[in-house]
Length: 154
Length: 423
Image (cartoon, rainbow over all chains, first blue to last red; front, top):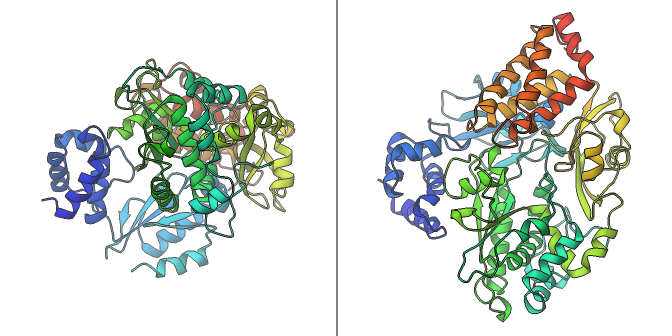
């Protein structure tokens, strides 16, 4: 069941567009924000509320990089793997993350603390390499800085 | 005023709020436009200024607007600001979005008036969290002050403005795919014609303009087309936000006269190459533009001059390739991105890009053969202009085709030595 708060937020988005289903990406984001990811159950609930079939909504949900159809950890690390960060050595940052957290891209630590994902250009190329954790952007990364940053996320 | 777009932007303080923005001369173009000009006047002024789209395509903005049907009573129309900056190596719109949100809103009001649109959206990249907060606040301020909403400044013109944040996909930057995303669909491109100016968002006439393009509009209205042309020292008018990343001393972003040379950008503004690194090539306008090399350093960065040199100005944000970075690895990184971000709608792109990526990876890992170079060459033709549904794959082929041309020896060395010489 969608919560009252979720419905309120989704209704707000529906009011901004002329067709109800046009707000479906917003609805996915609202529910994901609350629940961490979009389970099959969540998908079915949202689809029903948007007057869409679950299949149709899933075709949208799976298209976008930032809609998660698998469980994720409490904190999501998005490592920029695009060209400026490649030139400036994002691979060293990734190696450090792999060794520290014992996970590869696409995996979650066994304690559910972190999910590690590659991400296209974060638009901060003059401060490469960069990554985002949850809503926070970190730039001009070094391995020392990275170790400190990770400490802030439990 | 040499730098109209960034005159209010300072990294030392918060962006101007509405009151301070007005005190600095802001929203003047809205008063002028809504009170004294006709939509046709605005379009003509912008067309005369020769402002070209700053998203990368470089089409005359006023001309683009001129295809919108006018004078159909009750016709719903939309204006969309494309703030889905996701071209790898590009970080220019972020500066305008975070640095001076009211400038964008002002540009959108005047542009919406020119096409008589009453609803507008800012399609913002999900990753730009700070920009989202800043723009949301600025929109609220503009509504409170009567610059947005019903009967703006008592002139009878209405404009709603909404911020829409994406869910992450490079395709959303393509204007028809962006419209599909706004409609809550998969962001696949649409067939053209009909062009969005005739049938765009929800089937209604729609203009999609890049953020930097829209931010130029208030200044063109305030100071006129001749002034705008005089800002440039190249073939196209205005200033341009140029960015530079890679192993240079001072990577960054600067508003400079259109037509500033590549050499000046690298040597003066970016402080030259870092000690121990030599210049080998540059993508002049983002990941989907052809490499330029040493012989092109004096090329002026405007649409015509860069095209004449065999590349595209694109977004004007450059990525430098240095001698300590493997060009095959560099191009593999680009093709990995394009293969991942292909929407899968048309076969050449969906199948050809992953194939290209695999070949490049095998060459980079020392497992390539001479025939692989022919295969790559074949892809640059099969995925080139005219063979795919949109510009993604042809764009992806630009750095590959020019890479094969300028760095062929480096490709061959990988194959001969059976290892990447940079490892």
